[in-house]
Structures are given as C-alpha cells and as structure tokens.
Length: 376
Image (cartoon, rainbow, N blue to C red):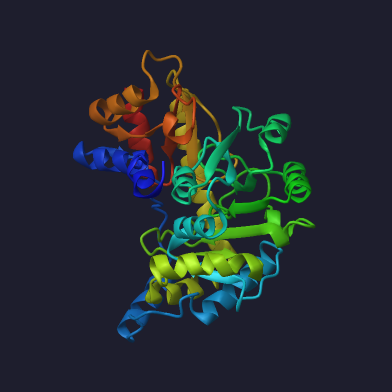
C-alpha cells in the first residue's frame, strides 16, 4: 500500500463516530475526551484580550517566543528536563499534530514503530501515513508490560517506540523501573522514544515521570505535551514537541508544511495558563477523582468489570458477561440507554472485543445520570 491509497485505506475515527452518534440519539457522551472542568477565567480573558488587540495573524512558525520560553520553564521545573526554547521546542496545533509532525519528520518508509496496545487511535494512522510499519506490544489487564515480548518485537528495522503516560485508554502510569527497561532497550538498539504526556497533571495513583529525565534518554526522546486536557481547551489546538536540535529540525519541517503555526491568540492565552497557581491543579484533580469514583462504582453495579485507572480520565470495562461484542454493546448503549462509549477494538490491532471505554471528564451531574441510565 503506497501513496494516496495508504491514506484512503485508513479507518475513520471510531471515537469521533461515537460522538456523532451521541448527538444523533441525544445521548450523554462518555466517548470522546471532552473535559467539562471549567476553563479558568484568566485564560479566557487572555484569549479575548489577544483577539481584541489584533493578534489574529500568523505567529512565528515554531510558536510565540514567550510561550516557548514558558514551556521550557515548565519542562525544567515539572518534567525535570532542560530544553532550549529557540531550537528545541515547537508549538503545534495540539498534541495530535505534534505526534503527526514527529512521525512524519522522523519515520521513513518501512521503519518499524513499536506501539503499546490498547493505544490512542491516532498513533497507528500516523505511522501508516509516514509509510512506516506499526508493531505491537500489549499492556495487560493488571497494567503490566511483557518485557520479553517487547525484546522479541524489537528488530534492526525498529526506528522508534511510542509511549503514552499516563496512558489512554488504560490509565496506566509508567513507573521508573519500566521506564529504565525501555531506556536500556532504546540505547542498546539505537531507537528513538516518542512520549505523549498530554495527561501528565491528571494522576490519581503514583507520580508522573518524564522519560526524557532519565539518564541517557534526553538525546533520543521527543517529549510531547499540550494544553487541551489540563486546561479544558480542546478546541484551541495548542500543543508542543520538545526534542534535541538534531531531531527537532525534521519535525519543524513537517510542522511548517502541515499547519504553519498554532492559533496565535490561543498561544497568548497558553502563556497565562502556565502561570496558574498550584491549587488550580489540585482542584482539577479532585474534580476528576470524583468522576472516576462515580463511573467506577456505577459500573461495578452492573455485570461489567471496570478497570480503575491510575491517571488520565478514561476507564476500560470488561463486558464479557454480556452476550454482545464491543460494537454491538456500544450501539445498544447509545441507542437504548442514551450513553455513548467506545468499543474496545478501536484501541487494538487485535483483540478488544470484550472491552469498552468510558470517559469521565464530563460534569458530575452528567456522570451520575449516565450511570443511572446504565444501571436501569
């Protein structure tokens, strides 16, 4: 499969399809990751101010200088990794574009890229569009990775590993020993590491560790983050990639020719977002923690078996006790119960028929109502 045919053969986003179905059937949307935690007033006012003052044209392609400087400060203080904002940070149209530009810039035809399944659905199409070859390792129900399986999957053709922590959809937070194992493989086999850390502030159990902060990993790691989830601004499309200069050069080329720049007024507002006090994050985490408890205990009262996440705001549930596969199950839920979820197979290369994913980033009343509908 080459050229345009490769793109035409890609499946449409199941998550976005479920959002469309939720609107069609007037259902509560627990499929797509819409955060309903209130956007902070200071951020909204800063966006308005930027628009009203005329900051409505292209910014510097790599992002407003002050924003790149603030991202570098955040990466130093929170992620414990140093980056030069002039050459090593690029502001993108959301973390999804950062992922796409990174893969387009660094993955060549027939390069293999190791992806952990279940996976965020953008990873596989991005690798395919770059003419690379996705290969898969699995995170099991106990949130463990199989080190021997990973070693077997790595070959001379492996160019990169994509790591999402906290992980969507399992909620796994990768811990230091696991990251050290991946670091040693990347160094020994001369492999790049692409880390998606979009949920880094939403952790219920454990602590976020940026892989690039481990000795020996910074020079072969692309660290990806963004503002959408943590600050409840998914529609603003502001993310970033941070990487050593030699890796950033091709990433910037891909970014330049795909999106030119992220939205200028929302870049300005993102500067303000990075100045919010610590209690903002504490209150946000408390909000999502309540949502996690509502959905977990609500699903426990059914024949589903929910998996309690350590981070992010998604919950997988085993539906093996029902006489339906995942697609039949979510179709029944959205049409008959008025609740939209995502079938598990959309997160797997193989398997997932006994799983569905719920999102608990919605407001508390909606979550309570959704659980009541499901229990009935």
